[in-house]
View 1 (cartoon, rainbow, N blue to C red):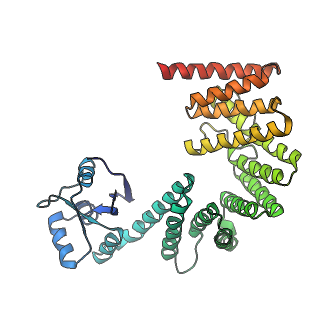
View 2 (cartoon, rainbow, N blue to C red):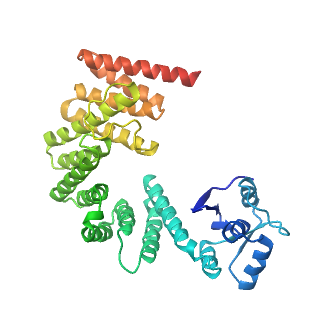
View 3 (cartoon, rainbow, N blue to C red):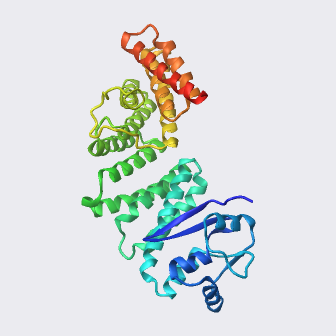
Length: 382
C-alpha cells in the first residue's frame, strides 16, 4: 500500500485534491460534496445517481490510503471511494449554480496542463509533452474566446517548443506565427520577457533549419530583450550569448564564437563567486542576485553548457589555455551550489591542474574554492 501522487486545486478559499490513479486524474466525491457544495456526501451521492453523472468506483488500496493520509472524508456504506472526472466536476458546478467557480476551475486546469507540459519538456520527454501542450492550447482557446487573447501567448510557445523538441519545424513555425501575431496585436502588453522567449524559440528553429543569418538575428534580439529586462550581464541573459556562440561555431567563425562564450563564462563566474564564495560580484546587472532564479534541473543544464564551452575552448585554444581552467572552475562552483560535491571536486581538480602555474589571482581563487569544498565535504561526512 503506497501513497499516490496528487495535485492540489486552489479555487479561492476552496482546495481540492486530484489523485493520480491508474485510471486517470480523479477527484474524491466526498471532498467535492463538502468543499464545493457544502453538502453531506451521502445526500450528494444520491443526487449523483439520480442525475446519472459518470462515476468511478475504486477499491484500490493505494487510492483509499492516499485519501486517508490527506484527511479526505470517508464514504459511509462504501468500502471503496467514488471518484469523479474533471468534466463531471465542471458539469456539476454549472448544474448546481456554482458558476462563479467554473472559470477559476478551468483556469486551474489550464495552469496544471501548462506546468505538466513544461515539466515533461524539461525532462526531455517531448513525445509525452506534445499532447499535453496541445490540450493546453485547446483549453486556452475555449477559455479566452471569442477574440484571441494575449493569455494564449505562453500556450502557443509551449506547443512550439514541444514541436521543436521533436524537430517538427513546420508545426513549430505555425505556433510561433500565432504567438507573433498576438504580440503584434498587443505591443504594449507584450513584455521584454515574452519577446525574449519568442526570439529564442525562433532562433532555435532557424538553427535547426540551418538558417544561420536568421538565427543570429533572433538570438541577438533575445539578448537585447533579456538585457532590457535584467541587464546585459545577468545569468538570464547568458543563454542568448551561448546560442550566438553555437551559431558562430556552426559557421566556422571561431573568434566570434569564443567572444560570445567568454561572456557566458564571465557572467556565471562572477555570479557564482558571489553566491558560493561570498566575493563581490564583478558583473553590472540590474539586480544583484541573492539567489539564482533557476532550479536544480536548470542548473545542471548550465553545467552542461559550461562543459560544452570548455570543450570548444580546449579544441580551439588548446587544453592548457587558462580559460579552459576557468571553465572547469566555474563548473565546479555551479556543482557546489547544487550539492554535487563529487563532480565539483573533479572539476576543481581539473581547474587547478590547468592553472596551477597561472597568475596569483587564479591560484588564490582555486584555493578559496578548495577550502569551501572541503568544508562541504566534511559537513556531508559528519
